Amino acid sequence: MATDNASTRSTEIRYRRDSAFSYTCHACNRCCHDKIIHLNPYEVARLAQNRSIGTTEFLAQYTDAAGTALNRVEDGACVFLTENGCGVHADRPLVCRIYPLGRHVTAEGEEWFSELAPHPQTEGAYGTAGTVEEYLTAQGTAPYIQAVDQYLDVLGRMATVLRALIGAGQETRSEAQRTMDDLVTGIDPEIPAWLDMDRVVREYCHAKRIAVPDDPATRMELHIHALDEWLHTHSV
Ligand code: SF4
Image 1 (cartoon, helix red, strand yellow):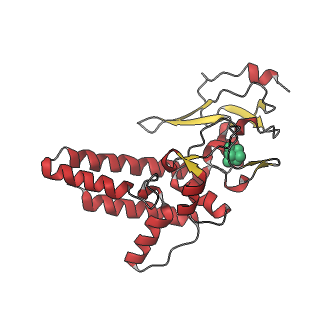
Image 2 (spheres, rainbow, N blue to C red):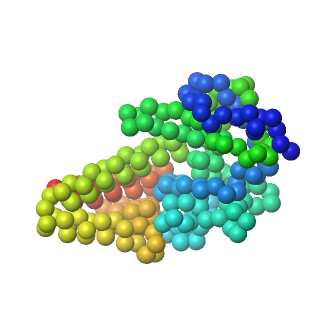
Image 3 (cartoon, rainbow, N blue to C red):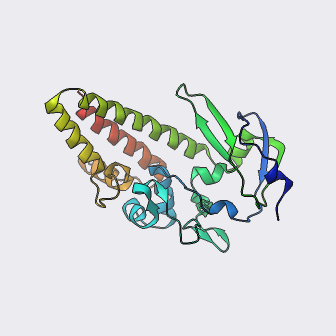
């Protein structure tokens, strides 16, 4: 059933957290088709835990695009879509939680939201009964937003270190190449090593003689800490 809602939505409006907005999903599941569902290592860890496997196995089995997006099946549906809806609902990634909104953060850290173009036959109902903030809270987005911001920061620091190595002369250029090789050479040649949270955290905990924590949020903190230590030792 098409709704007037879908045909009258605008992707041009900029929402803030206090903007009037509400959305009720009616489980038509059309938004789970033909979409690129991007993942960061925290989201991979949550999904891997949901599947009762480690991140190394999850990345190899369920992801595409060098470990940064969920696989889709032949009809374009997300690999986790079942006839009863999302098969990993409690641990679904951020883009699924905030749909039909997209989150944007400027280089200065200013946050805003826009609506994604809806499927023409979506059964989702848009409204103004709440605010963007209330919608984000209801969808349990806080740890996911924290994770995406922290991983974007660490990616920025990685880029800075690599740029400095590349700009520092011939000898350090080959060091930059080795650094890059270290970062990207994982167990699976398609997947960069640094993305594999379990592997990085296991090696870090082994070196520090500490126990590997179970919960993904604590492992994420150690993952980022390990990457920062590693970047520090490669800085010029
Ligand atoms: S993870 Fe769940 S909500 Fe997200 S696209 Fe896949 S099936 Fe849909």
